[in-house]
Length: 310
Ligand code: SAM
Image (tube, rainbow, N blue to C red; front, side, top):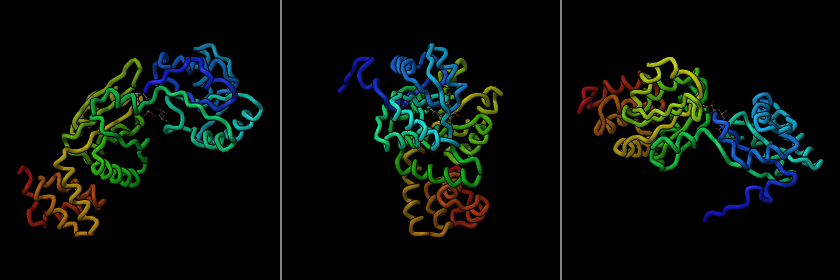
């Protein structure tokens, strides 16, 4: 049941740590509650104080700032606890969006709660939910994994686990990606997803050049390459699960993999249901074995690579 409390209700008074979501682009997305709170608190703990001062100035807030970033979070947490002990109230913000979501904040919250003080969340903008809400992807849950690892081997490993979990759970996957790596992510999705799997890219959400594109996995690399602007700005990428037919096959193969069946047998099982290229892609995804080895096995398999285009 919806319960609406007074806009300036009692929960936002007294010394506590207020975890405040701030806009991811559009200044007007700062909630009225957040604005009011930022005008009241003595301290604002911010990731980059230069960024936060712009926001504070825009609303006429004169709170003092202190820095909390990934390299000083423990010491900053202690300093915040000291301020709370002195009777001050502190707001925690990040550069954009919701603190502690791929941003500093979790250690501060833990320390404050351990010290016995209240932690009060002020919800608001977040890039993941902003994209998902406008993605049109089926609302059957999602796995969010922050930024994928930069190193190729670590990223491959992470993706393998993510894709296997996605198929098991039949859900969406959402990741953040930096502009200088978006082309690489596009190539990876092209290689690792089924060609017709839905990929929704959110670029510059809530900003002037906002773009939300709904593509098939096989089109992502082409879309990225089609305009230099498609490599600029901030990105969130979501993709839906593979078609049920492939998901069923993955379940079969997962069970087979648990029995440690040889890759040749795995390929034969897949080739009974899928074209050779899909079978090879799935075998690579499930086993993590190098592609050239999979293709060698494919050439040796009973059904052979000629089964493509069944
Ligand atoms: N805590 C933030 C949140 O709640 O969304 C995310 C912080 S994370 C360090 C920053 C990443 O979020 C960016 O690199 C980008 O992937 C994504 N992001 C933030 N703002 C965005 C926007 N306006 N449009 C698309 N992606 C955005």
